[in-house]
Length: 238
Image 1: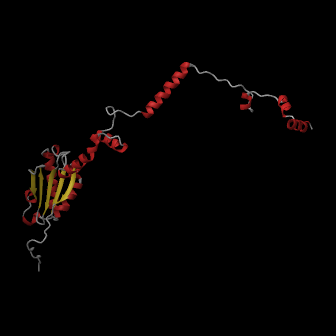
Image 2: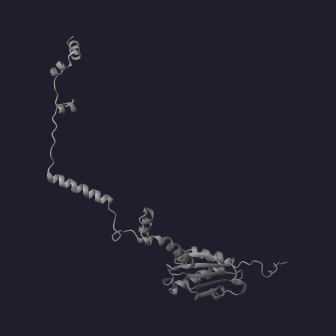
Image 3: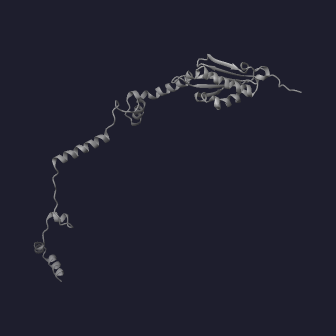
C-alpha cells in the first residue's frame, strides 16, 4: 500500500520525492554488492624497483639473440638462418654458389676430404686366382697367386686353392705390418671364377676379422665386351 502511494507521489511530484530519496556515495554506486572499503596500497619503492628490474631482465632475455662471436652455431648455419629470416649479409648471397662449387669439386675428387684407400684386386680367372694389394697411387705392395702356394697347372683352378690363397694373403698383410698403413681398403673384383666366392668366404670368416673392418667400397671391374672380335667357340667334350 505504501509502495503504491510512493509511486504515485513520485510521478506527480518528482521534485519532492528526490529530496526524500537516500543519496548514495559514488563508491557505493560502483560496488553495490560489497560493503568493504577499497584501500589503494602504495607499493614500496624498493620492491617496485626490483620488480621493474626483473621484468626488464625477462624481456631482454626473451628478445636478445646470441652474438656471432659467442654463438655455438657454425658459420654455415648462421648464413642459412640469415637467409631464412631475410637479414642475411652480402656474404651469404654467395653461399649457394660456394656449395655448388664444393659439390662439383667433391664429384671430381671424391677423396679430397680424407685419405684415399688402398686397393685389393681379386682376379678370379677360371684357371687361376690372383690377389694384388696396391697403394692408393697404384704401386703394388703384395701380389700372389695360387702358383706361389705350390699348385701347378690345372691344380691352380678351383675353390680350395683360392681359399688357401686368400687366407695366406691376409696372414701376410698382418705379418708385414701393413695394417698400420691401411686406413681404408677398396676391393676390386674381376672375373667370375671359383676364386671369387672363395675370397668372399675367407673375408667374412675368422681369417678376415682384421681386414673386413677396413673395407670402405666394393667394386666390380669385370671386362664387358660390346661387339669387338669374335669369341672363341664353346669347348665340347665327347
